[in-house]
Length: 265
Image 1 (cartoon, rainbow, N blue to C red):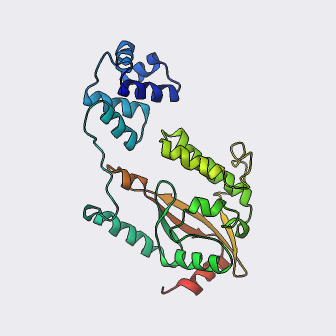
Image 2: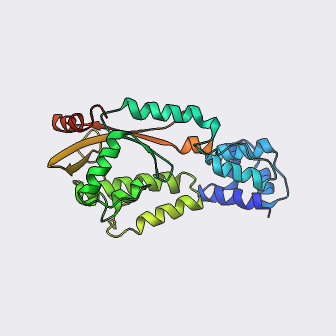
Image 3: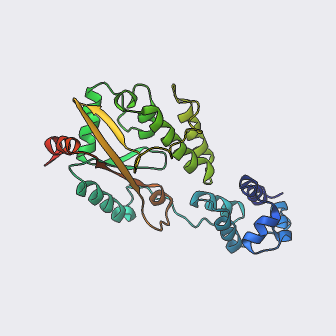
């Protein structure tokens, strides 16, 4: 079995597809699927890309399939500070500034902080002053879940933790996750105090339009919810992995807090 064939079989079995089922989806013969998996047939570059699309793999996995089949990779992975990424950086800066005086952040695939607007930086400073532990380049998922992180400041922490873990699990395990993605999920699940029933917790029964976050800080309950957006039709792995999160307000007291402290920053 070739390296490509072994990977193709692994991806097919991960999606619980038989060779026949995959052949029907891909509109090729089951015999050809078998020959590709055993190495008896070398797929064309177009066939490798086609298999990636049918199996729903991400850009990095598609690149890996191409390499294993002996072809050059098709998707780039540029550093965000590269000259060619200037339009992306400018767009992110506009998105951060235009949301002031309310918090907004930019995260990578594993929820590491890339960028934050002045309101978010103010929030982090106030939380640290109140005793929250946070590193210079924080991972926001770990900060939220950690016992010395946001946990003691947030109402209904267990419920929110279950929601966030379910989301990360879907993104990094069910949706063609890599070994690095799986390791990230395992690291989160190893954090002390994670609810043991996080995967079974039912969130759909909540009487709410969205799952909101209530942060108790400076004698005020900051009631917010967020939207997460990304760039449309990315052809670069770094661009694909960027997540832009904007926080919106649920009451007048929360709006007054942000306008009082962050207007004009």
